[in-house]
Amino acid sequence: MVKAWQRGSRELLKDDLNPSLINEITTRVLSNRYPAYSQHGGIYDALKATDGMMYGIQNDEVYDAMDLFEETEGVDIVPAAAVAVAALGKAVAEGRIGRKETVLLNITGGGERKLEQEMGTFIVDPIFISKNITESEIEELLCEHLKRD
Image 1 (tube, rainbow, N blue to C red):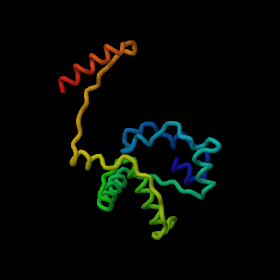
Image 2: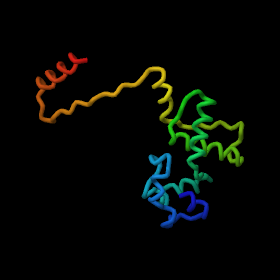
Image 3: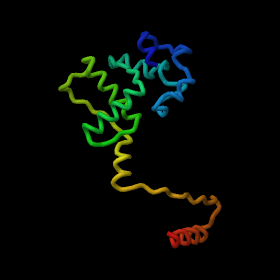
Image 4: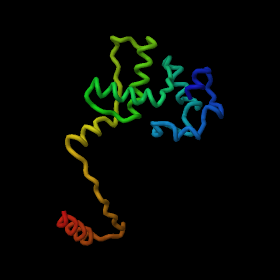
């Protein structure tokens, strides 16, 4: 999408959507084979209407943003959130956002490593139950499970 946006094009070319690159992306959760870019009312239109900008963030920039956020805020963040941090950094560096402006950046997936260090995490074995189970069978199953723990 970044390449199409830089060309000023609504249309995504075949080279813009290279599925073989997905395994090289640190934040695969953000990748999409069929992004809502070209559709009317999609990303292209939203960026045009708001005089927006799109940034391509490289893997090393993701890790740098993760480190910067943790050093600054004291909380670790996941790579997908670091993409937003890195893009914000580029916007500030380009002067698209002033250093004194207030920006709300929605960071999700933060604090996982800190939580693990401070509280620990537990692996929970799931109990698979048939949808046809009776209430008394559920009660018996749960009581047996709770007695073991």
